Amino acid sequence: MCGFNLGEVCDTTIAYLKNPDCDLMSTLKAPDLPTGGQLIYDPAALGEIYRTGRGSFKVRAKWRYVKGENLIEIYEIPYSTTSEAIMDKVAELVKAGKIKEIADMRDETDLTGLKLAIDLKRGTDPDKLMAKLFRLTPLQDSQSCNFNILIAGMPRVMGVREILEEWTAWRSDCVRRRVYFNMKKKQDKLHLLKGLQRILLNIDRAIKIIRETEEDAEVVPNLMIGFGIDQVQAEYVADIRLRNINKEYILKRTQEVGDLEAEIADLEATVNDPRRIRKIIMDELAQVKKKYAAPRRTEILYDLPDDQDQGEEDETPDYPVHLFLSQEGYFKKITPQSLRMSSEQKYKEGDGPLLYWEGTNRDELLVFTDKQQCYKTRMSDFDDSKASVLGDYLPTKLAMEPEERVVWACIPGDYSGQLLFFFANGKAARVELSAYQTQTRRKKLTGAYSDKSPLVGAFLLREDRELAVYASDGRCMVFHTALLAPKTTRTTQGVNVMTLKAKRSVERVLPLEETAIVNAARYRARSLPVAGALLKEDDRGEKQLSLLDE
Image (cartoon, rainbow, N blue to C red; front, top):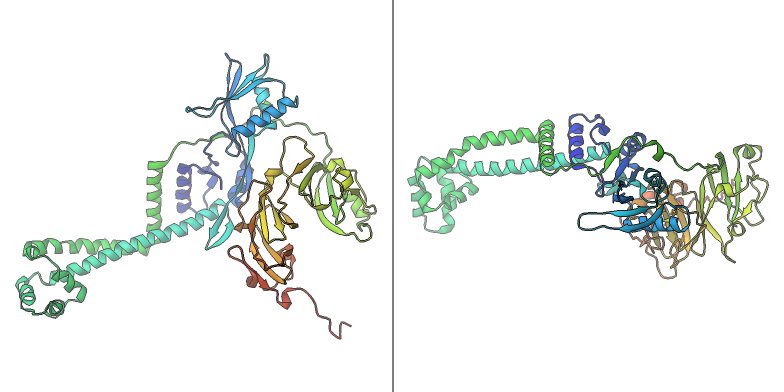
């Protein structure tokens, strides 16, 4: 979850409590990040995040031009990056000759705060240089959102209005229980004072009962009989110190009875009135805002300067394509028109379909191999093909190593989301897709995933879902991917998802909706790892032949 400004959150919650259909974006203007920067305001993108709990927004660094020294000072950067990553990227671009306007770059961060200084060559336009740096470096970065929250022990991705609804219900219950607790304490106190009231007119009789009782254990029962009070009240009277057994003390204490009764009636009305509960919550939120709210750190940039709103021109033709990858590594890019003419795909003997996507000619493709390597290519690098041909052989096209084999591939899009890898040893690794993003046109990434165990399955997660994991001993377990925390390291070994017996392994992983499982609750895991359960016959999807079938 991205950060928001506390004052804006309080205002939004108060507005929601007054009207659940209120316009959230009028009070919750945009995320507010600890490192500041400038948020590029996109109402459609923010509306999607507020509605679904998923999406991304762009944040860029703050900078100023020091004319006398001909340098740029960057003093706030996006929350999702670091000074080191920015400097490394700028150095890489300078070395590659893509940026020639920079003479030097230094990190001058000190106790006064962050500062990256960029010395400019003579005649450099600082605005044009920063526009280029925003485009090519993490000085402008996308911040992904995935509002994944535990509700009643189960993970759910929720939009802002749903979060406020759940929080309001929870907070209302908290306030109601607090008021009820205070009411019960006052009721108990009132009960004691009413017992004390009983002896108000006959203090001497109470003293006589206590004095004439021979055994200590009989004091309380005798007071109960003598004044018609219960045990709790009698214990309270019996424990009063000798110096307090006077009419003045007792009158002073019993004068509280009227006030207590009024307070209890008020608290009881509050417990039973949701409107009064909401009023308490709103008052407390107003106090929190008054005491703790701070000004926004992230500035909202509603309009970009014209020279900074231009991206690089991409001359690659953009048109829809259908993409096919076979088990042996043959790849075809087919236009919709060609596919309509002939849709039956041709494969080599012993080969068959592995993956299918719909994309565009400008999309990137990440190809993963059994050597833990990832090859990056573009759809435009492949010629348009037909269903009647085998297609391009990826190991040859991408210049893979001898004996290297394609095991999986995906279209990363804007690199939001995660990759989920499953290994034969029962472990799973959830890796941020952004870990595979590079600013340069690198063709090959080594260490694409862990080499500790063979890869048995991989998924591209844009949103959390339920998956079924099958083991070689006939066991199966179903779990929600939200139980796995994403990592930024590509080679992470992951966490144990399925506990396996000796010489057993994970054989395959499928989305739950693509399985034949009908009794999902039998295999569902609430925490990890689990051993799973043996598959029932009606969950295997194997149809028994009958005489009629024959």
